[in-house]
Length: 81
Image: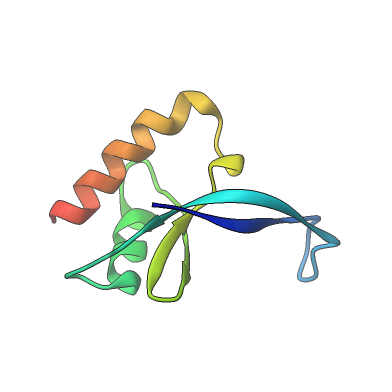
């Protein structure tokens, strides 16, 4: 599913602005959002996601287009474990 969201712009502990973006929202059942996010982080390639409203959110804005396929494989692997 896709949902409206925002990407933080700027560095450090307090980003300077937010840009509107479209996020990929993954329903992590039956393993739960925390477990799926951890599997993604520890996978190959490592994928960093956010958790919001019990869903795992991926921001395509942070990925080069050539990595989309690898991230999709990582997501399928993490869901199947």
